[in-house]
Length: 81
Image (tube, rainbow, N blue to C red; front, side, top):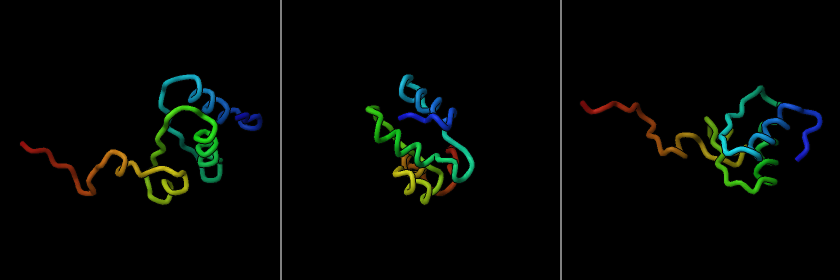
């Protein structure tokens, strides 16, 4: 993928492709985050999981919610003493 018009997305793409590190992708609405994720998943041979904080965001990004991925309960987690 070649992001000539957006150097930050190109840097993020190269970082994912050439390192074994995770990324946290954030930004304002309409900046291309979901498009970036779709392109990354399409062109990268790496295995990856896309998580999002809300169900709508997860559906748009073809991912899962953070709670679903980590199998977190909906209620508060109170430690046993």
